[in-house]
Amino acid sequence: MSSKTLLLVAGALLLALPAAMAQAPAAPATAEEATPPTLAPPPPPLEPLTPEKRGDIFMARKMYREAIEEYSKCPQTAVILNKIGIAHHQMNNLDTAKKFYERAIKKDKRYPEAVNNLGTIHYAKRSYRRAVNQYKKALKLNPQAASIYSNLGTALFARKKYKEAAEAYAQALALDPEVFERRSTYGVMLQERNIEERAKFHYYLAKIYAQAGVTDRALLYIRKALEEGFKDKKKFTEEPEFASLQELAEFQEIMATEYRVL
Image (cartoon, rainbow, N blue to C red; front, side, top):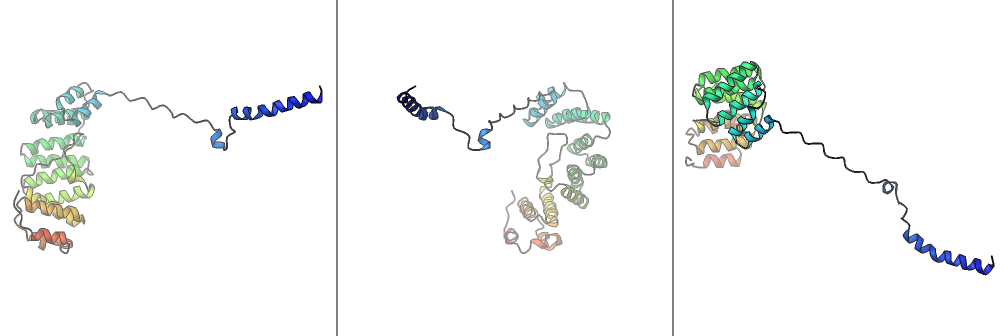
């Protein structure tokens, strides 16, 4: 090959080199860039909805008849019988609810939720002594249940045993600081909230919260008690449980306000 031909070939190669470099993929700058992206794992398959889960969903939506229909498809364990009882209870079918709670207890005598809920039937029927006894039975089975202590306090309150009621409420608060802020549950245990002497009830709650050092809620329930007609206003300035509130501007404002009973 002549030298002239060699020069022509070299020139052609030099001209083709930039185009080839433009078409070639760039070399990765880092090891991370060299690693191919990993695909996210597929989501786990959804668990099929059992009749019990469908019943729970209906309960949360307050569709109690539909809940009963779904629970009736389940094996009739103590838990299921108790849930059917709660559904009837929410529809105010107290006698039917009572039968299901009793059936649940017969299935499992050591099931505190059903024992507690039977107490709420006695309370609803104003059999406060029987309600107290039932709640005490439930507490023997589950002494750490704040909601049962709350129910016991409510039943004792209805019997005008205020000191014992306050002790039960204090124990409930010690076990669960949010116990009095919760609404009745549609799970497996009901919590009473029907307090006829509401002004006095809120006075005792204020006292319990003040003693526990929960200032904001103590002030809230002092105000509620006065708004609902609690007449003995001096108790808030004279009783030792409220001593830590005396210098607070909000407490002084509450005491200076003349409340119109709601």
